[in-house]
Amino acid sequence: MEIFALNEGSYSVDSSKKFIPFDPQTDNTKDRPGSLFIHVNPFLVETSDDLILFDAGLGFKDTRDEMLIHQHIRNYGFDPDDVTLVLMSHLHYDHSGGLVGERSGKLEPSFPHATHVIQKGEWEIALAGKSSSYHKDIFEALKDSVKIQFLEGSGELKPGIQYELSGGHCPFHQVFWLNDNGQKCFYGGDELPEPEQLLRKFIAKYDYDGRKAMQLREEYGKKAAEENYTCLFYHAKSNTVGNVSFEDDHFTVTRVL
Image (cartoon, rainbow, N blue to C red):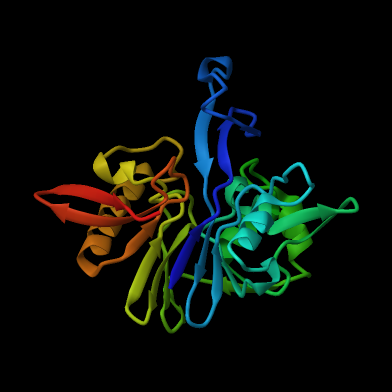
């Protein structure tokens, strides 16, 4: 198993839910009052059988009009068409924007040959378009253009890939546990988005069920430590991939990537 972080950079987001690039070296947080500052890191994981994308980022482009996520995948020696599975924790815009790209004024799938794995309930909420956290046009463009495997609840996607309906960050959020010939990784989406969230207990206002999400973070951290799972942190500032240890009721995360 090989893990690649596809860093899309840092952004501010305010009540309008628009994501604006933010460079900590040159931009000042005081110039963006009321904003939340986040970092975006989709992941590419190569296993014995698949090339897996965990969530798809914002879909922003570089100065050459190429999607950042495509550029990063190519930089690691792959082609976007090589991706076989797109495993979605949930469909909020900062995780799903990169599922499509605009070409000649039309939205087209970014990973047309991949099976997109999504909780059925999450898809139905996203396609309904009743929340600004979801961009309905993305899912309208996907629904008849790619293979979508809808999941309900928790289970095994295929040997070595377990999914778990978690429902803390949003009602149909899911997490993934991979085991590729003894090499293991865990992707917790927005229920374990940063290593710092293992180091302190808190209830986040942005979670659908903040108390449940807090409890899940601790459960995931303990399982990762006990069973030697490498954790992928989607919103980490720098420590995007880490190994977790738990001793004396205290978590430690050692940076891998």
